[in-house]
Image: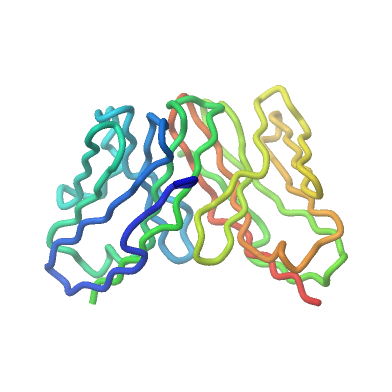
Length: 115
Length: 111
């Protein structure tokens, strides 16, 4: 595809359930980023990948959050034992490389609602 | 603490009018500054990027300015259109990959 895609677009789950969010970056982009956008808050950095490795996981809010990337392409963000405070829009972005001037291209996001 | 503050929080203007959005930051080290436009239900899209040494950058009707001494940036929108209604987000890149975002200004353009 031409852009970054994310699925599902919307996810409603019950507290305590696990959820898995998927991101398909632009083909050829080696860098991939996950962000969380809560109402009235700026984008919160969660994790980034350079290829399949994640050099910086410091943005993950708790050990219930994990992410992986396989084949240098698709990435999944998993939230275990979801809590109501996890409700937010989860955005994925990709860029050609990890570099200060490289533009990030964002997907449309997954809106997660935890009841 | 690295922070990016934007003002106003929201703004309503009439079609055809100009407006200016503000971004103040306390981020170090500073690599570059981007302004993004985010339509409802979509991801942000980059409008401009400026490095430390640049003080103005234009993209059509959008003009961004940067004063690295006072750590202030502005985004000026000329001759606004209905399609400009969106959130505008200021982002500072710190180092190689640290991206720090403001909370955005929500702009509404009325006919």
